[in-house]
Amino acid sequence: MNNPCHTLSRVAATLLSLITIGALFAVPFFAPRAIVQDLFGVLTLLVLALNWNMLAGFAGLVSVGQQAFVGIGAYAMFAAVILWGLDPMVGILIGGLAATLFAIPMAFFTFRLNGAYFAIGTWVVADISRLTAGQWMALGGGTGTSLPKGTARDMFGVEAIKEVLDVSSAAAADALTYWVALTLTLLLLVASYLFLRSRMGLGLQAIRDNANAARSVGVDPVRIKVAVFIFTALGTGLCGALMFMQITRVTPDAAFSVIDWTAFVIFVVVIGGIGTLPGPIIGVAVFYCLQRLMADYGTAYLIVLGLLGIPIMLFARRGLWGTFVDRTGLEILPLRHLAPPRRCSEDVSRLAASQPANGMENRRSVTSI
Amino acid sequence: MSILSLKAVSKSFGALKVTDDVSFDLGSGEALGIIGPNGAGKSTLFNLITGNFPVDKGQIFLDGLDVTRESAMMRCASGIGRSFQIPQPFGRLSVYENLLVAARFGGTVPATEAPDFCMDILERTRLATLANREAGGLPLLQRKRLELARAMATRPRVILLDEIAGGLTEAECRELVDTIREIHAGGTAIIWIEHVLHALNSVVERLIVLNFGQVLMAGPPEEVMASRAVQEIYLGIEA
Image (cartoon, rainbow over all chains, first blue to last red):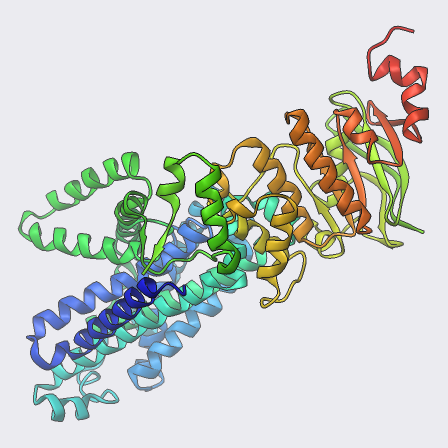
């Protein structure tokens, strides 16, 4: 860490990320509305991917029921706006809260299952919630409902944005939802990083590697996994509420869609690099490009996604980012806790002197930038 | 005063009784060896003591407190550390991180003290040069050392070592014995399962012989090794 070269690259990396973040925040000021909407879609998919990666990639909880939290977040937001007359922004928070609360009983039941059984269990719970939402007559039952006209226009902050950007109410609402999505993404990235670097995060990675040994060194797997499950439910629920506020219409089939909110998300995380923090970002970028390239080919595009996913799962099991890190040793957002440098530097020279060069060693050594 | 007591502990896997009415006391700071033929139930006994397996019958006391129903995590926190017969490192974590987990959770070492605490153990177990290596890529000797180091990092008052000298060369074995002697000299009680008898007997003060899940005999190493019954059953010498 005291290496001046490292410090320099660290400063450069920080500057670059700040510029990127600044540019992303500035997008609604210069870009057309279609781009803002596209980026909104990318960011919300990224939020879902970050959450699922945390569950499956770090906690080993392969959930196929994340659409439960998207749907519950969306429905709670619609209830808050339509039934209780609250501002949609407050509705989003209520959506996140509802999903979090739902995660507690869901964890209670599904955590009795392991591996593939857990995956099916979460899917079943999600489908039960879809059917239940279809019975909510005040929100349109099986056919769903729409947000009242003008909800977006009257939303907190829209008027001010309209003045500043000098655009229509609809465009101002798009800018606002975009900024909320961007903020949510950044908060989630920072929170994930801090969590994984914390004591709990280290315990989580130990559990992922060997649950039995983890218990024997005092790590409680259930406690940490429940914490992750509930934390990701919050992120997924907020994201669901936000997405359906932008769509302004909700139906049980759309809000609890396993394809849209879980299957695509799994694809994104797997091709990007499961169990790495930058993986979902790469995955979302690839997914978005594919989607744009093949927008005109209809369902053929799903076949191409599948064909792309298979070789990556077979030959690059750590995904694009994981493979890149393995090849180059270059790591962004490294999660490694390095041994104290004082002794480490002395060790490195001793190691070089006493041990033959080892391919594994070179590959594993991680340069933090 | 005894730090660990087993009272009539039994465990069956289906019809097979792997631990049959085992009782013994481990004195505070004592070093106890467990020997017995393969399949005598030695590793199972460890799994019962650490809470990795639940006991069927009997009780386990740590410092006079009944821990029979406590989870493995709780027993680790109350001072039982272990190594696994087949090393079980956290493969994708570094050697240093393997210790860090053990120190921060089982050892409840504060964040600020943990780095130095872990490095001290890594130096004592001669792993310091490999601190930032991924643990999954280590060769056998280093894996065995890591098992010992990680158990030490939980700051145990009783450390359970399961065939930690098996498969090592004579020189490696001597190094390991030295390290275990140091741990013992530091006041930690030890229970050590081992087939490498000369290594075991150079450390322990008492031996227990297990056969078919039962305690066949217990006593000072010389006495146990000299007994006819042990030679017959354990060493396969005809009477």
